[in-house]
Amino acid sequence: MKYNALIIIVLIFISVASAQSKKEDSLRFEIENDMDIIKPNLLSNHPLGMYISRINHNFKVRSPEKYSFSFDVSSANVVLPYVKSYELTNTIDRVFAANFPWHDREYNFDLNSVPSQTKEFTADGVIRSYKFTFSLPLNAHHELSLGIRSYSLDKGKYPFSLFTSDESIEWFHSNIAGGEDPFSRRYYGLNQAKIEFRDENNRFINMNNGDFQFPGIEINYFYYPPLEINKKQRIYLNFGTHLGINLSRFNPVADIGISSSAMKKIFVQNKNLLTIGLSAGALRQRFFKYGNQVNFSNQTFLYSFEGLLDYKRKLKNHNFISYGINYSFQTSYEASKDFDHIVLTGQRIKTHWQQTFSHLYKNLEGWTFICTYSVKQLSYYVSIREDLRLDNAPDIQTAVGVKMSFKKNALPTRK
Image (cartoon, rainbow, N blue to C red; front, top):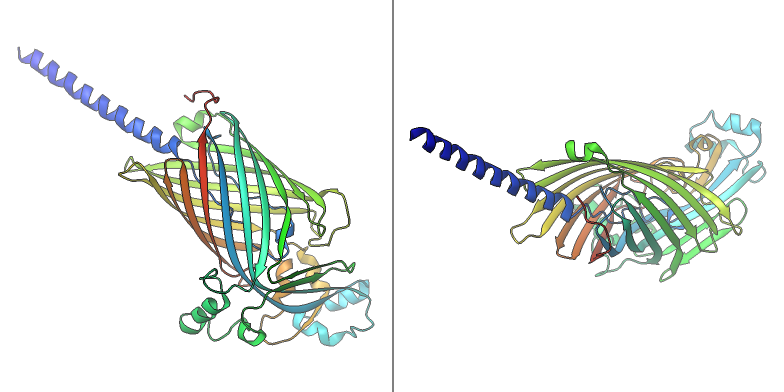
């Protein structure tokens, strides 16, 4: 009799444990599959970069079961005082210039007669980007997305630029960190709005307060391969191809690129999910040309890298909230070796006045904090970005966005 009771107890224990295990597996499946990472458009609102196709890296682990629309609006403060660049063309002059630090070269050449190609650049104001994206899952492992990007320039006054206005940034510098007017905003005047760039071929862009630009569209295709490590190790890969069609008269070209991402998912307390992601990509600029473009970049390829740490919590009301930190890296717009033979002139108001041009020869880096709240078919997100080089191209950048998903019943059932 006692053995029968023992068997019954063991069977009850196994049944409860099995039910608990199935419940945990079901909960994990729901968390892992119901809401994938929602990453907004984190590309910087660079005054020249907005005319160029760039890769916004993808950290999703599968083609979604729903097609979706998303809309992002970001604001970024830029202050780049007027600087003129002389790129020396004579070999002897180039070798001679390389012997001096950049801030001494101006005094060692007669810039009125030395053989050179000249450029001019200045940018000030709040650049706003507007990004619309439509994502269409083709089947369980293939996805197609269409993006439309546009930009505007304004003076950045309240209440539309709460964090990115000149007043807010200079209040922070004066009262918290940075010191009084470290970037000469007050000297040049607060709430200015103007972008001017002239290349060595005398082609130029000019953007004033209230101007709106529609630089182009992008088409992205993503493949999510089904791998054994998906289930066993929760490690996922995706591969992307990218086509950027620039429609503005300033850069009438098409760019193509590729990217690849790897993600590792880790459960925390069975109901929260930590995702670690790495992604790298390469963009071939000016693959097709259909007009005369302003020379925004002399690089054939732009390489980029992103790292993402995302922590997602399931709330009691079956909604989700996630917090993410993103690191982004992009190679320079101009070849770094060329900086050894350029001469810069401008007002030496601040110690790093040259960054208007010099930052174009350096890799760009930035950190972004992201917060997303998802409820049923809607997800809302905010982000704040800070560049790491303090080159103000841009300085601080904030964004808000919304994503709406719709069920697509034609997709095959996932296992």
